[in-house]
Length: 232
Ligand code: 4FV
Image (cartoon, rainbow, N blue to C red; front, side, top):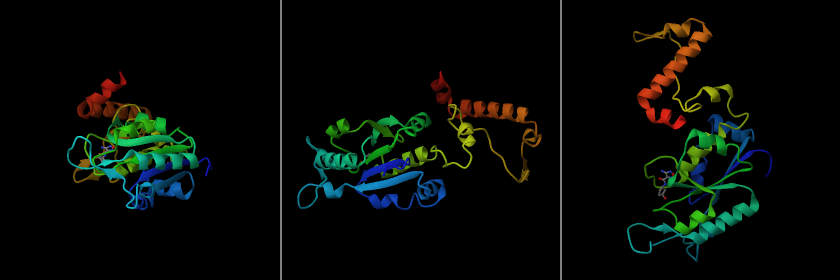
């Protein structure tokens, strides 16, 4: 499969979830153009016994079920033997918070990423040694790692050369410099009594850039002062 494309492999109990989200849009077009490959791998066939068991009760008691390490290990080995060199990531609320800086780093990891999407209460602790890193998309609990995997795929895919119509927009967007993006306006010039700031109609690109930088900084100070500390 080594075609220079960025490969996204996912180990999941719900491979069908990856069909529709990537149909259409920039990521869908990138798949059609072969710039990226999204390949889900079903975990169930690696389950144990006649019932292909993949989960079990937690030692020490407690509610819910935990994913067993053996099926995950077998699935990881199978995919890595087919696709050597993939960077293995467990999607978990206990992982490193996903930031644009990390997205930029992952966008350079060729041939690509192998994402492990958990279910139930999570995975057996011994799975952590089988992956290269753990990533969280946010401090909230979902019922599965599939949506986090899709978020990461979308964020990394759009940084692949040829995906975004105008790569320059990557430089200007939010978090490109740890700042929120400046206010954007388009037609009409007046909407419900609110006019587009005159500066944007002036054609003076120097002044427009300065206005945008000031707006981005002010908005970041107001809404996300933590971002300003991060740059320091
Ligand atoms: C999650 C997150 C997340 C936790 C238990 C799946 C769920 C269930 N993953 N960022 N937030 N995962 O909530 O990455 O197995």
